[in-house]
Image (cartoon, rainbow, N blue to C red; front, side, top):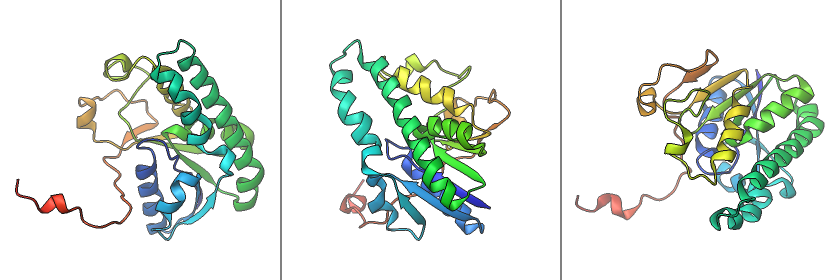
Amino acid sequence: MRILIMPATAGGDFHPTVATALELVARGHDVLVYTEHGGVKSLRQTDLLTRTAPRELDFRRRLISQHDPDRRAGGKDGPAALAEALDDYSEDQARELATDVVADFRPELFVGSLTASAIAQKLAARTGLPTCVVNSDFYGGPNPPRPLEQDFDDRVIPEFAYMNAAMQTADLVLHAVDQHFDYDFDGLPPHNHYVGPLLWERPGPRPGYLDEPG
């Protein structure tokens, strides 16, 4: 199967999605990883086939650097502006993928991380491509075991609500966490599945503190 994978480089999204890509390659699938510039260095440590997004579409450049100051300051326009910017970013990435990468690679499935969930939604609308989202966080809805307000700052709830809603439009959602860490929640929608931790780290030197007593 030809699979296009996008591990967005925001927060903890990147590593579980790379782990998914490596496992799919190990199982014989033809995988192309579409990465932003923040992921290029890490992916050099793997044998994955990659393509880099245009620098102007980099998530950190487009969203975090522009909107974090307003969020930290508690600006009233911060959450709404960030959700709107996330929607614009996702539309631009979906357009780039549809007109360039999908047309060239001709995938049969798109797999995106949580931050790429709206990209998956918009790409499916453009191309009809089946989609899967790898959720690096606990289950956030609909009807989650805990309200978002108990775990997130008010300023980022609109962002997570936007991504959680987009995630549920995918054909398949894989939650990269053990069910136990979601309070043994058993109310996932039928197309959602707990798959346990999906672990990958970029190779590096062993930290000295691991050998310290205690």
